[in-house]
Length: 470
Image (tube, rainbow, N blue to C red; front, side, top):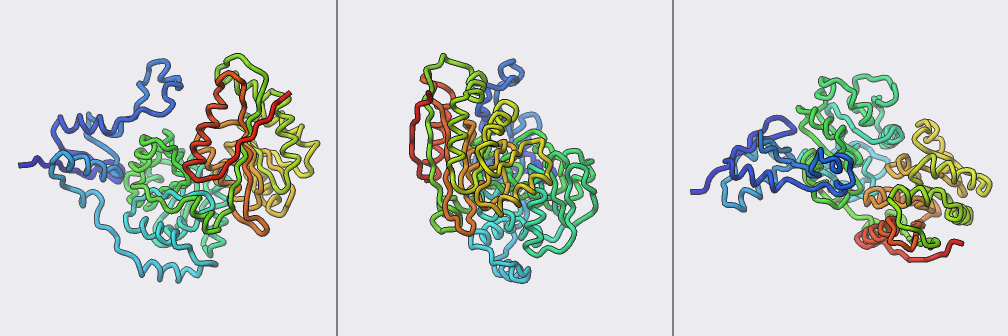
């Protein structure tokens, strides 16, 4: 007779798997993953950490509730009976026609697209979901529908102060006429049906405040693998409804399972390629620009970054490129002092309308930049990746320039997303992906290959062009 494995719900975050020690060891091994890039981290180099994330505790037999489908499959494949699923996840919500009726009664200024309704329906059905939907697919509308449908105390966690304001503005545009509590940088806190906050501000909230919400939505959910964000969701022990939204995952199983554990199963809503084919977002044309430098000696990664940031010829090339482009252009850099402050004076004398945005720029000033550029046809935004690669909604971006190289799949796709929104007179965007050949098997040239892999996976068309720097 097959042995029975039983799961027990501990709270809205964790469950316990009741099984023998042998199966517990197998589960521990199955849910252990090497973190990508761990070997470069100080804690690994100093031997404080072995570079692995373990999602199943062999001491307590605890694991995230969101990973229940994987535990179920793992046990059944090995011939075990599995009990307790309904005790953990409850009954599915049956809702189809009533959801359409509900949306009609909201009197939205426009009708949701089919894929937005499908994402809404799936999230309502399961109550725990990680919605994977690309930039410009209308994630804020999906979040709005969920917040209105549940009609419970809801908190929406976003990564930046700009996104707090943008999300609140979107909700008002959709017809929401009640007051929204916005938590960041000393804003007044009050009791409200909908609260929008940065994770940095919410992390400071008392435990009883965190546990007072019925619904939590994590926007840009790929960031929730960070320790602070993970800690927030683990403290929300009584919050049953958990929805994550993101445009990108980093491609690793470890990252996906961590997020599914905290939110729920991944639901791919639609792809950028499908949105382009439907004409919902702008078409993309990618120019991979390889700058060929004089032969350099092999460097460490940081030495290479310092060399590229300080390269006068490289920065001149970027300046000439940006000043020659027509339309609004977003130039993204990585290091503020080393690169942003070098490029700014070079561009300042060459372009008419230049805006410089970095971590030290106030939220109000960032919003002013967004509003000004929306009314312009020849502006340049010089911005750090941290401030403008995620979530900022500017429709009139015609060109994006990667002035600094990046290997991160998430950062690259999020940055591309800044230019994918359509606007009057705009149905395409150009990306200039600048890479460097130092003739020594350098890091940034290898990173270009990683980005090209991403472009291939996303069905983005690209061309390779090479220029010699004198």
